[in-house]
Image (cartoon, rainbow, N blue to C red; front, side):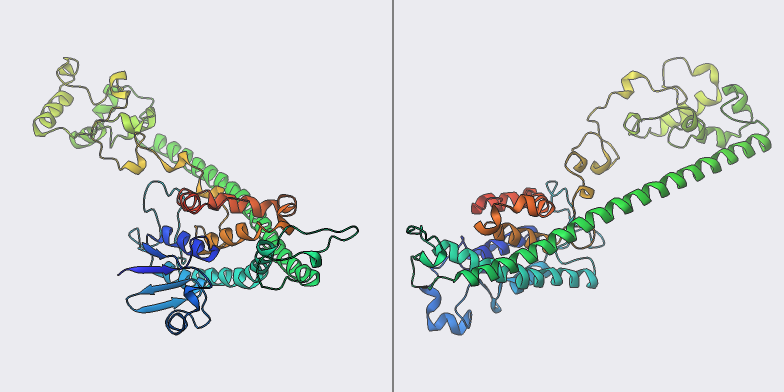
Length: 401
């Protein structure tokens, strides 16, 4: 099914939808039109939008209008990833997990809340201000006069009065302050929760160590051979059955070697020996005199430097755990980001960041944005500098405030 997005590329609402579509993996065919000309026809009003507005999404099923309705539609049709449909890692460049419409019904409602907040508390004030500033021509100042009432506009749209502009500015600043306070609260809460989790982890680790020490003491008191670490290898083997000795001689299953040495998981031999080697290893283990003849590598010997050098040999380990492949930890961790909904990036973050970045372009708030809303500015930058968001932003020529 071909999805066509009707509207000019320089329209902020169009750019917002394209950002969501990029994360959803949805291909949109943009149909640019001249606002004020092609959207003023009777056919456009009947089929696309009753008030001749943009954007409009056209599909085989018909037309869908209003920005956030289109955002919700695209977010709901996001292609699922992962076995449980919760994690979103479409490609290695997405080092931050995301699920556009939340993991459950509650998170979906939270996403809707933020979309409504942006529409009612940010867009309602930002768009009229930006439109007025765009239409505004350089003021023709006279001596002792410099108000907006002396400014002419390049279109027939009447200029907003100073009182109206002040009302819009106050409403926009109120919405921005609310976002700033919420982000500051979320950051402080995460610090508190992280401190509590750290203390809990230390306490659990201490309990585990105490339990291990108690178990070791009990084993030393009950085992006829005492502690395996304190015994020579020959005496330890004398107390084992043939089956137990074969198990202990295998590095993957050895409790003796696991307790005595620290192994790098990549230094183990990844290719299992064949049947002949198994028989030969068993003979060598049963006959200690043959273990040093150089024909086979002793399973009980400490890995040689040759084995400790990582090589690109086939590994049974998955690429996610491999030291030889790029890891997402090379990028900023997901814990370094603030998410408005749940513990992953959602459409709420993308829409809020895009809308706030657009609102902060207004001259009335741009000059003092970093001083009045420092956490909000950092949040916008962190979201819009993510790999996919940055690509979309650069392709559309959108600059960060």
